[in-house]
Image 1: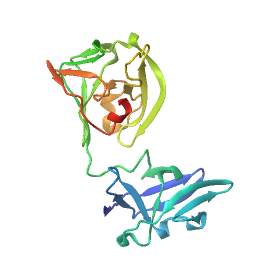
Image 2: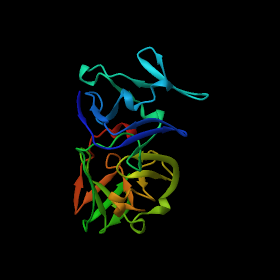
Image 3: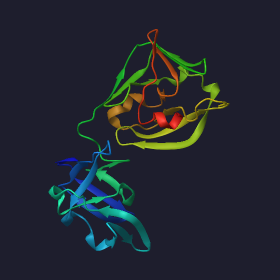
Length: 233
């Protein structure tokens, strides 16, 4: 476990009730978790809304109960702090809502326009071919190649109901193969309204490197092993 103080103003709201309001949050990285959590000084948490439940606390707001909403970290260096589960609230850093988990200050996400020749194939069929990708470089992940829709065989895909959130990019929607057969579902995604820092990817389509055959500038790329690989196992 490692931790470090943050100077961001962090608030958590459950419905209309602010349950956390802190200008002294602590970012905590547990050994078994690659992304950080926030821990907050007791004084910055609505302790009156927390009810002990074994080693955890349930959050009770009106008639609503969120089980295992908070707990104390075992490390004595974090005595006097509470970790509050992400599910317990909607979270804001300053005035911007954040999703999934706190942003890691040691992680970069850069979206850079490129002229590399990128070809994407699924089961031997070329589904995308472009010379105008936007490359997203994200710490600890392979390059993601975002492709203009005009360069994607959209006739082979249909929109999926799947939505996911990313604290660095926003909310993603997905494309899935019309006739998947043995092909991967929800293999491509896009951001209609990406966060400003990666605005260059707006509307562009990316494919999971872990599930497709990528060729970049004539060189086939191996499929990487990442936390997303298990989706397509």
